[in-house]
Image (cartoon, rainbow, N blue to C red; front, side, top):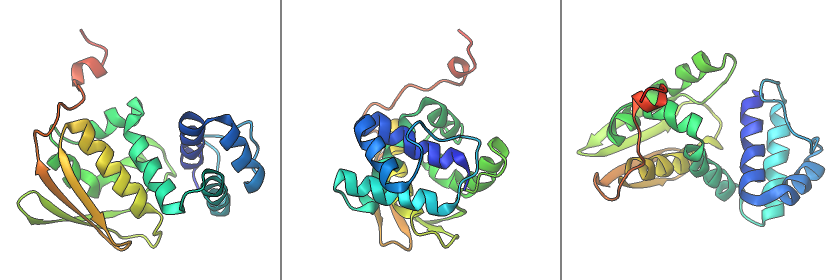
Amino acid sequence: MHGFLIRGIELFLRTRHGEEIWCAACADAGLDRRGTQMMGSYRTEAAQRLLQAASAALQIRRDELLEDIGGWIPRLDSIRHVMRFSGSCYEDFVLSLDDLHDRGRVVLPGLDLPKIATQVTGPNAYHLRITSAEADWYPVLAGFLRGMADDYGVLALVEGDGTSLDVRIADTAFARGSRFSLTEFAGRP
């Protein structure tokens, strides 16, 4: 497993829940509490142990933890900016998720994000399936979709059953979205 993913879990735990939770999760998972290597390589079992230990320390279900992590990801400006390049509206963003796996590998060689198949099922309605066997990605993706909807200022209903997700855009102007400008991102005035 790419260290970028483990490092993301670490940053989430440290930022949202503090050093005490991070240290407790590391102790239970057998990881070094000083931190993980973003460009390192970890066994999949390390991430599984870390998630299990963190959910126990936080006293929440594993899928709740994964969804919280997914919802937190858009708060990272670097990830948010990369994802906002997907389109000027939330609908474009959802439709671009089919390319996420390949774009992730361009940005970080060796990063194995899930392959997502997106199907338009009606006006402002989409059905998403992850084509990899890893079910842990569904709650992460659900949280991520909700977080990005907030960023765009959209009211989106995201529902899943562990084998797929359905997204329905209920209101495209629900709230003021986060400000995003390609020229500001590029450092231009």
